[in-house]
Image 1 (spheres, one colour):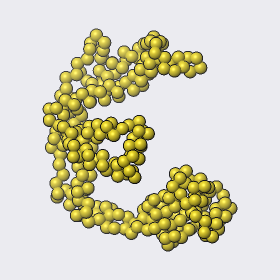
Image 2: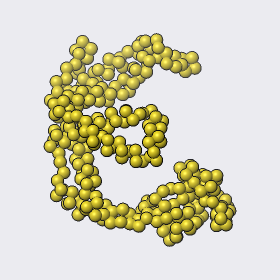
Image 3: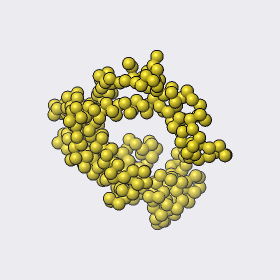
Image 4: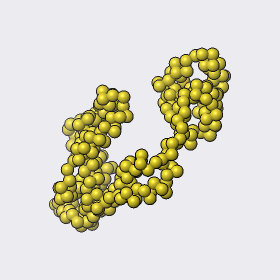
Length: 293
């Protein structure tokens, strides 16, 4: 029996009954006096997302079974390495864990998520016998080395204001010795950078708008340039420093390149593996509840 027919029929059970008939207890909230119950929320979720949710549940059951069949277990070393890579994006452990809490997660939950990700990748590698040879890595490097290097970049800070007059006044103040980061924090309309004193970080030449890129890369570290008019306002920029471009070398990037090529193969093979698991599985609906076409 085709899985999509089973899923559709299962969801139809919930959609057949009106929301008010599925229970009035356990009121979660009310809207202008109209109660919203847990039963209503469940029915709404099934009606709108039921097929996808039930499909995911079936997939997870099949994946867990396949992992047992292939004797897949979490690779602690790989999991630890991935967590460490994420931690590097934060200034310290406390900030890292605070960010997890702010997003409704925890270090334990992150570990479980990464363990599952690593095991799924190992499952695909074993089931489809996926690997990447050194010859494949070298071939890809030789064909793409011009785009694999580190591009030249400029570290830039910005201040955005609404009018040209305001920009000109600020430019005079800055060139007279006003502290750029303090001014940015006080008056800049660029909410993405003002709390960092206008710091935009390193931006590769090709990522800057042509007008800005031309002005920035014609300046010297410490120069203040502008005002430059863009669609959303007037900008004053401070060039903090430059990072020179660096060509890629096979020795430096071969390991990372191999990982990326392997990940690409895994991503492409995953849908095929799921399809094969579904085709081999015996999915038996409860005929008392589900009638398929």
